Image 1 (tube, helix red, strand yellow):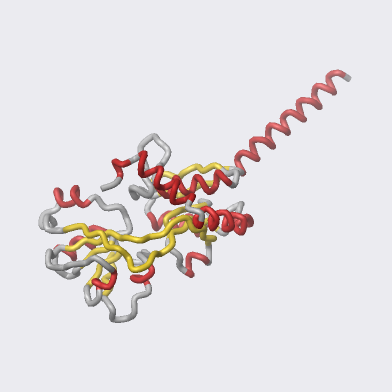
Image 2 (tube, rainbow, N blue to C red):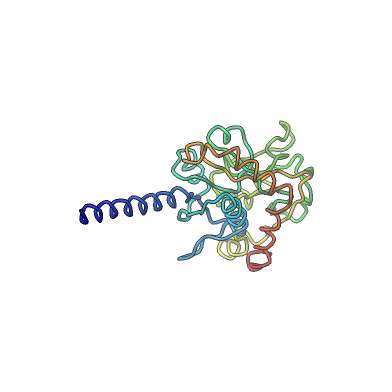
Length: 259
């Protein structure tokens, strides 16, 4: 009788422990990350940090979830993994109808300036309207910002390239006037390594109006059914300035990642 009681007790304890482990596993979401300082910074043997990481972690912690991160990936690989449901979330996305087909988007910030690169000192760019009539190199398929993505036909000429190296080669060759880069780019390091690039200058352009930035949740995620709840909280945190506060706190703690 005693043995039967002990056996039953062991089963109960084992079941409770298994349920606790499963519950913890279910509360952990996988975020795909790409090295893109200061938004996402992938460091060896350390958890990723950055503005996007801070905002996304804050959102899902409020909802009772923890985050685990992939190794460093390209933007495109993260997007493909999100679409396939191999990761739950990624951050730093602009809105697009095709992205809403496979993910739920939660606002956390806005884009009010952009880094452009020019190779001629006589090109003066300070706002989006200064791009009118220019040839602009961009990575194929990458969203930039609202005015650029929706520019009227003929307003400027978009030259699509497959990678940043190609973009800067055509800039140096004079085949384009401007490069817009979404990915992180270490200009000074590049100029020291590649001949003919010394005249390239980085220009900060203020946008005429802002484009919203989103964290995306795969529609194949195990928590996709909670999207309305996530949307409600992210809208609140964006409107009350909490996301902005969290990202500003990151900037203060890590000034080394800013110009």
